[in-house]
Amino acid sequence: MLDYRFDTFIVLCDTMNYTKAAEKLNLTQPAVTQHIRYLENMYDGKLFNYDGKRLKLTEKGIRLLEFTKSMKYNSLKIKSVISEPNATDFNIGVSKTIGEYIIAPKIKKILESKPNAKFSLAVENTQELLYLLEESKLDFVLVEGFFDSCKYDSKLYKKESFIGVCSPRCQFAGEKITINEILDERLILREIGSGTRAIFEEALYRKNYSINNFKKVISINDFSIIKSIIANDLGISFLYEPVVADEIEKGLLAKFEIKDLIMDGAFYFICLKDNLFSMDWINFIKSV
Image 1 (cartoon, rainbow, N blue to C red):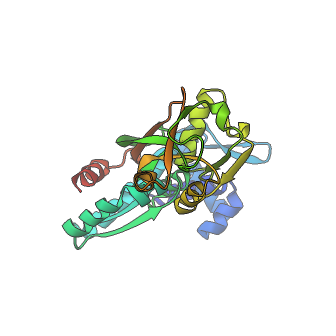
Image 2: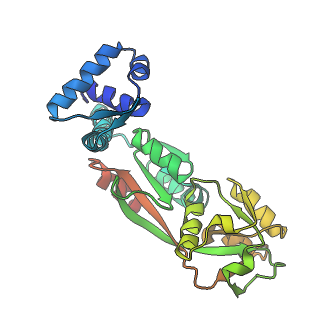
Image 3: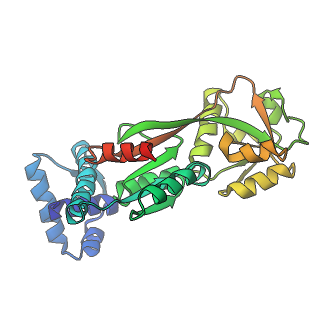
């Protein structure tokens, strides 16, 4: 069981305000202060400092927060496992590309092989999933795009091709072109925070370009709408190949390449550092 003072520490890190933390925890402000001082004495150093009127974590506080989130997760999971030792109970988070085009066969196998399994599946963009993971609301996530590998335990899950997509009627269909040739086109991207968008932005950055170089940019968080717009020759996009494989095969969409623009796509398994169950989750996802 996690010491209640660590819960106070986590809430104060979330609110960065003693009064708000006290309200959220249904404690008095002096009680919150007392809990933090107890931890500071335990770890022999300040966990928070004030920068003017703003409360900020010290380096020691940042490190403790990383460990505390793992401890909270492990504490909750151990309680669950001890209570129901034979149960298969887990919460998965997947980014939208994986959720809509990769994970479905896995879910089918889970339901077939573990008929009594209790699980939830959250499909969100990468940044939202990492937030839920840190809140101990997910056991692990499968995501695309970029993340701070120092903050999490991670393993490569799968590599996928990342391609330019347009209408078969578009002048770029099947061609190999330069970045400059598409700057006047309507560029359709996923929302900020999505791994799909991050992959493309990173590729542009390596060639000293950015989204701002494009004259017309539209953000849409739904793949079906993006593909429909492209199929009607109203814009171009850059997506993982599994997202558009069926449409390309049927001739509804077409691929194109950008010269010298390297776009590597990969999906990662991520969990909190020091997660006592990480190997269980990795072995499980590999087994189905």
